[in-house]
Amino acid sequence: MTAETPIGEAKILSSKTRFVLGGICLLILLLLLAGAISIPFVFDSPSLRYKLGFKKTLLRTGQIFGTVAATLLLLQLVLSARLKLLDRIFALNRLYIFHRVNAVAVGLLALLHPLLVFSTTDLSNIPVELKYWPEAVGGFLLLLLWLVIASGIWRLFLDIHFDRWWLFHRIATFLAAVLMVLHILFACEIFEQGLPRTGLFMISGVYILFLGWVKVKPLLRNKAPFLINSIARAGVDAYAVEFAPPQKTSFRYTPGQFAFITFRSKNLSSEEHPFTISSTPTRPENLLFTIRCSGDWTNQIGRLQPGEKAVLDGPYGQFSHLAAGLHCELVMIAGGIGITPMLSMLRYMADKNDERSITLIWSNRTRKDIVFADEFDELERNLKGLRILHVFTRESKEAGGGGRLDEDQLDTLLQDCSRQSAVFICGPPVMMAEMRRILPKIGFSHNTIYWEKFGL
Image (cartoon, rainbow, N blue to C red; front, side, top):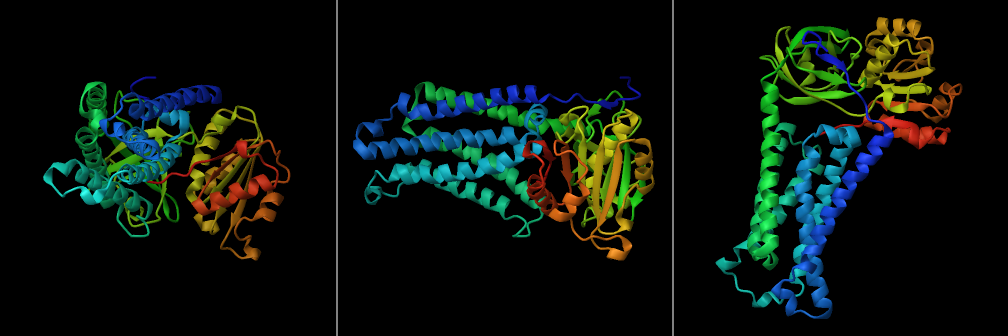
């Protein structure tokens, strides 16, 4: 690859490699959790010496919950750091889902920790004194954790703007990590000295270094921005934005992947958003994103100008036909602008003269919502095995409309397709959930259904 054509095809990990690497990651996590669980057993605290029977069990269980909660809280940074290796193994959208689930687990364990610890103590005899500030720090930490969790779960319901929530989330999670270390150091007798205290300082140091690296990465990307080559309409409410990468910068991707884009434009705020790459790595002269105007921010996309800059972070995701093998029959179900990863795959397959059977079901509101209509006609001519079936949800039956895809309609449209086909679904979340529910009912295997739901 030369400096003049720094865009190209990335290699995708085989399912066997992902399974092995995923197993190694899981083993590391289990070892970390086993270490956290063993601390109250190996390093007996003075408090346990004065407890007997059930009270001793409650106190030790509370300590275990505390050490496990601390371990999982530090894991949150790893899950949200957009590590390319973890994305190749698990896919970024799954890591973010686990990040949310793990947050709730941390909150519950952190809540149970003081309940169990204090259940063995007569709180009426504990005076309110300054020397108990570590316990107060723990109480504030618990409140902060649940504020972070609640704001993340109910952000849309509470109508909190993403940028404001994201700023609060970053500050609050860092503060939570600091408070957690302070609480452990000064409230827990186990960490007063010896190996546990030394280990906590070492882990804190690693966490700070890793956090610093996570914060430095965006600064490095800012030094090598992409330039907007062109911006053109791709439909009634969609734009195709073409980028030229900076010199001596490699951007290798797999058809179907996505990237985060931050535009440096006087006409558009510098919010970061994920978009699917709609070009193909077989044509290294351009990098194309197709963006539909569907909100306050995306409605301003048309105001971008050629020559303006953008920072790209990616590529990410495993939503690619290459993950399903080179020869299996393909079924693609797209809703609206969810066609973009399929467009990347079809462009790639056309350039590779792929002759396999491909059935594309594309649902749009009306015919006017179709993007790149002429190119899809050309793709259907050039790809011998491609069959495109349009569904229009807001057209009359006389005009070719059929309403939303349901089980009977989908079964009819796919009656000639092998039930061993690899099925790719991309579209609105409700539609994807419905397709994933219907497809197994009409004979397709759960194991061959690919979908990617991404949201921050």
